[in-house]
Image (cartoon, rainbow, N blue to C red; front, side, top):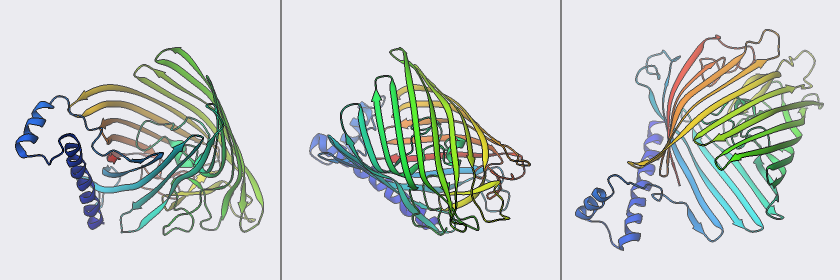
Length: 417
């Protein structure tokens, strides 16, 4: 694990240094001397611009970019010697590559990600990959692995951890199918049909090497999503030049195929959302209702389903109501290389509609720093009965864990190019 962290860190620093040299050479046509470098730094000491350090590569309509990210983390629930309980730990997060194409009326986008976990196991998989066609300025279609039109878009969150809907496949979800988008003034309509999920990538699990959460064929349940239909309608009220409120409603319905019984059961989710942009303030609100009715073999519980992502599956209550509330304030800085600082607090709550299943909650209080091509998230994430924010993994989103609040302090540093 340590060797891989060092290798990625060396790559990270190499890209940074090379980009500095390119930026100088493009301006002067020669390599920088120590004296010239010092003079340049003094001249820009209060006006450092890092936005062009590591630009994406462009060739006509084709753009290639990506990111490398690292985490510093401290977990309140780790108490064994050598764990994160002391001074914390530094871990490699992810590296990924973006490829985008735009030559009207055709467009395309793809991203592939690589993760490496404690113990040396690696996992890599597609994030998205689709081909699109614009009929005009208002209408387009996308075919392939694309973002499912549901709820607050593109995210229901401000923080690095996302809001809770992400962990049950209802935020930033990607599946394989066809999506139609109509953007007509204040109205935005999106319709989607997804015959299947995005598929399993490379990993040690049977079916969970993927970016977004889906039903997975793990263990004895063996369920899979199919023939999912989505509809999202939103309207934006423009109160003033920098004051607007979007209100909308989303619905989702699909089938669950059980490999053992060969039978299909339904699953659905729906709910309203609101997003307000009021100057430097942003507000996100959402209320969702979700239900799965798998056709498991006789005697097998239907109170939970098995969902997976990042190569790890866990149980999720089959019936739930989910509530989301988030607020942020963006402060422009434009000094010392910092473009802006965003302060936020995101809270979400899962009301499990299954007897004996305790509720799940999470709250993330944090700050995001925009520093040229770097994004830095500093988060204090608290969770109760949460697999990513507590000692339990398999049961927290179903029968629960210890029902106590736990804290993960996390700093994510990403270089985006």
